[in-house]
Image 1 (tube, rainbow, N blue to C red):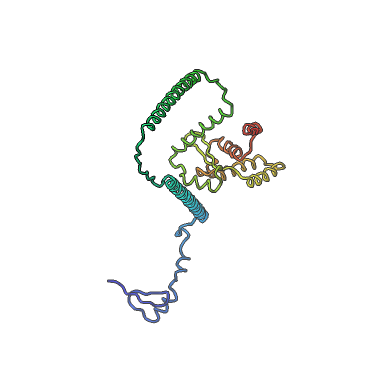
Image 2: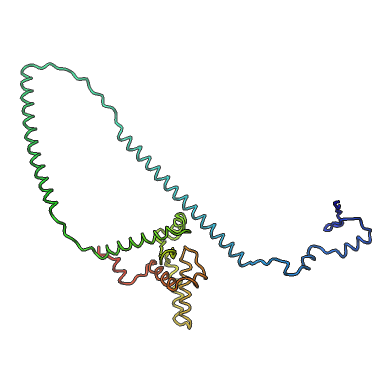
Length: 307
């Protein structure tokens, strides 16, 4: 049988048989409220909340939402460019069609005119003269065509001079081959970044600011180069290392900070610094500087030509 509850005070409800006035007053004085019950519970009854972890999760979610927003903006911009190209193409085709279409030519009615015997003789002499001229022109063209054919055959017999391939061309071919290999390795990655994500990075950091470096299959990194403003801050830190007692330690931390900041994919953190290959960090740091425009004199000479 269900019990019927009766409201005793604003915060208390009583179930069961009714109490007399004295018992009711005692109940009001001794009954704990919600705050008293919570304070009486031991600490083990509560589930601990990791505030720092929750904040990191919120920050990560905000970053992902921002990246998705950038991707959506990049897709929208790309769609607008495609639609604009289509509109221009349709307009150009219409202009071509309008130029090609011409008014039909109405042939005039042929008027049959009777000719005299003298006119027929003159016309026959003109036709014979035209035939002779055509025959002479044809023979001349045949002679010219034979000469051109002989000259063409002679030109084919000539052997081309073998030229030495410049070092710059060999380097360009090697770079193109290496780039195709890196892109092929990246294509086989399971969790590789989407084309939209790469497009969003280019919109944020610059069309030529995104680079990929591969140390082997399953060990590929995508990063962006440093700007002039970022390099000024790095130089300020490096200048302070001259008189520092722990300059090597600070310089090592500087490399780590630059790599963690510039690497876009895969996701890297302090744990990655501990377990990555020994030379990956230094190699990535050097390539970030190289792609940021810091070249040796020899490298700069290879990229320079006289006008």
